[in-house]
Length: 404
Image 1 (cartoon, rainbow, N blue to C red):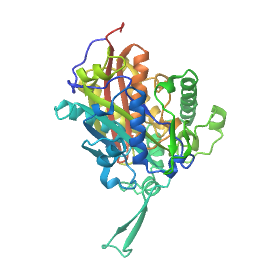
Image 2: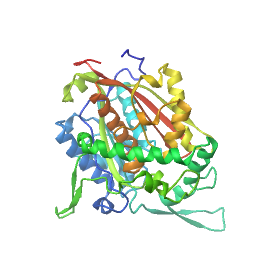
Image 3: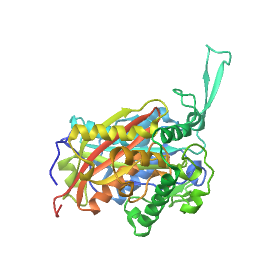
Image 4: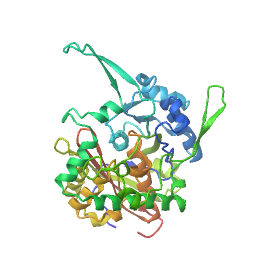
């Protein structure tokens, strides 16, 4: 494997210092009862301890979330205090692109020399998301209440239609057949359960206990609650909500967090349990599709990144994406002439859920872990976000202690 020129020459992701919670579906776990920012900080502290990383190594935090949470105004200082740290940081959000944007933002902090060890912490709780009341002095309705998750999913300001409609519109544009969408979805579930059975997910996901203010257990977050063992026959029997879209071929709302570190090569070798593994960021790309065609935007971003780097799809050892609709993967496969059976070998958000902020962070962690299993190679991570946005990044995993 030859090295492609890297956009981030200094930044590295230390192998084995990452982790994610499981993603229980909306209202199915004690996560629905807690301050998700506090939980995320405490969970990151726990994960760093399990990975053998002294939290004092961190000198900066990049947070990513999309749904307002109690005391969100304080963002990084509050979360850092939950880790018993006094370090600076900031918060960013870009709908479902947040999880990858946070990783890239942390890399930029390291690349500039501003910070040496940056913690990336992304999280969201769709359960009991808040309702805001907005003054609207230019309309007869002087106050407008807005349920942050459900009203935004139900109304795209660019089209006036629900987000679900973009999947149907994109399926019609590309003349996708429902049979292919159902077959892809059935495979995605088999991929997830196969990864679970062979223990792959245990390398990434960390069981976490929730305690109340008295220190008593509220229960464990130790399963991707909401994942169903669907079959091709059950998918075919589902009612079509829009072209090629059923309840089974779209994801579900969930809660969770995910974290990783970005640092320079020297620090990565110091804190990683396997310093011979070198993980760098080769390139990133973002683009937008036409209004109402969000499912094609990730493919456009990947086309852009391949053109910029000169890499080919055949060179990608791992291909993994954020796919809220199964239609996303079919369109990507058609445009990039890529077999969708090569993608998402260890599971994907279509199956395990969609807490928005941490979704692409977990995707990235799983993708990098899979590449390490394979002995290294290029890793392509991509996804879509509200506003018809596509985002993509290429990573390179090199095992300097083994054969490529």
